[in-house]
Amino acid sequence: EAGVVQSPRYKIIEKKQPVAFWCNPISGHNTLYWYLQNLGQGPELLIRYENEEAVDDSQLPKDRFSAERLKGVDSTLKIQPAELGDSAVYLCASSLGDGTDTQYFGPGTRLTVL
Amino acid sequence: AQSVSQHNHHVILSEAASLELGCNYSYGGTVNLFWYVQYPGQHLQLLLKYFSGDPLVKGIKGFEAEFIKSKFSFNLRKPSVQWSDTAEYFCAAANTNAGKSTFGDGTTLTVKP
Image 1: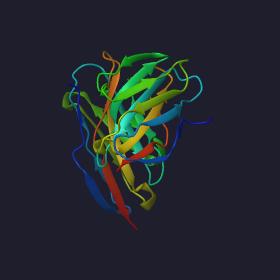
Image 2: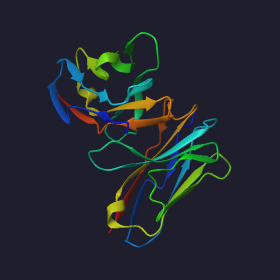
Image 3: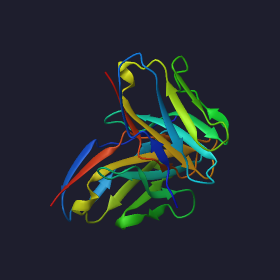
Image 4: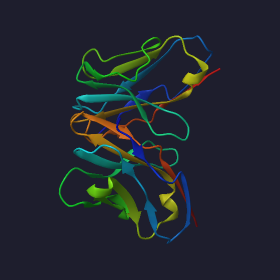
């Protein structure tokens, strides 16, 4: 069974530039999560989808971050414009059930904003 | 707000020593509890979980955890660690009413050969 796929694995951009991350969850998993992980901290939820509906986006900074999961499968997270403080690892995860179920994580995208 | 606290930020042990990593959560209702592990260079993966039933759960690689409801705790244990257990360990609690999970800040375990 293929795991959660994320791309790119690494991204270096200058501040004020846009950036996008892509995630393909495990086949059949209805719930998809985007997390931000800073060094020395645990994953912090940005947004959670159940199918194509964003059911929890309370922690997503909507002035610069956006996400979509148009067909309820893969998803894109965008930052525009990026700031220095956005440097972090962006994790995607998926689960078969709702937000209380076991989550399967992708390898993450390490973003560096210069 | 729901929160998860992991008491130890960094633990250093010698091989064959016993391990216990603390985890406490703040939510008083029904919770699902997890320990995830991230080995160097790898992605986060499930170590073990508790949803209901026997509060002592066993996971992969000889790890176990005990849910103590009265203490809001879900501590991770292993009787004898190996060098290959060197990793970062994250506790997570899922509030079944709100349908969301919260992660602790993780504990880095270093096992010296």
